[in-house]
Image 1 (cartoon, chains in turn blue, orange):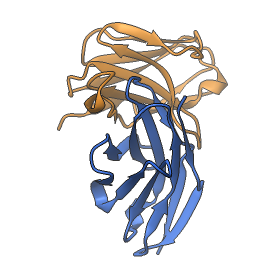
Image 2 (image 1 turned 90 degrees about the horizontal axis):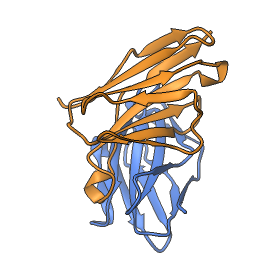
Image 3 (image 1 turned 90 degrees about the vertical axis):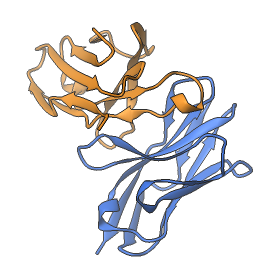
Image 4 (image 1 turned 120 degrees about the vertical axis):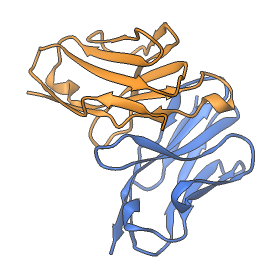
Length: 113
Length: 116
């Protein structure tokens, strides 16, 4: 079985400061890992994905994530938060032989001016 | 731009009155999915089509049905909506079901369903 734990349900940062969203996963197989962002009343947008290539993955809008197998983590970071980053973020895992996505519970990011 | 389109964006229906939500895609992907997302929760997979093959999740209520008349379109039918069916419904597509390049799912903007 596979599962995803997002360690923070809510993160609040000041504009211009770093953002860290933490995600731990468990998977019996080599996983593919994703971060999606969802703005209010919108669909999910893919920020970045890990599929067993480079462990440091760069995504859109300045986000990046590092896959650490020894820690079973896939934390999302951004060096400088922007007001437009306020949204819900989902860490998602998929097994190599299964189409199903396992979603974390989500982390709500608020950005203070 | 290639994309996933959902219509309408907002739908209001009455308790027990059938409703249909629409999804179309220009990505020419083989797989189309329907998710239900309730407030402050992660999306929950209802079912998916791989080409014309329909696959229902075990815990999807019988009240939810789907049709895929062609590659581009997929519909979600709720036969007798209850108050508990009020949610955001997300359509997604992917190239395939297996292999690293197939996992990425592209989501539409969603349809927010209100049941009165």
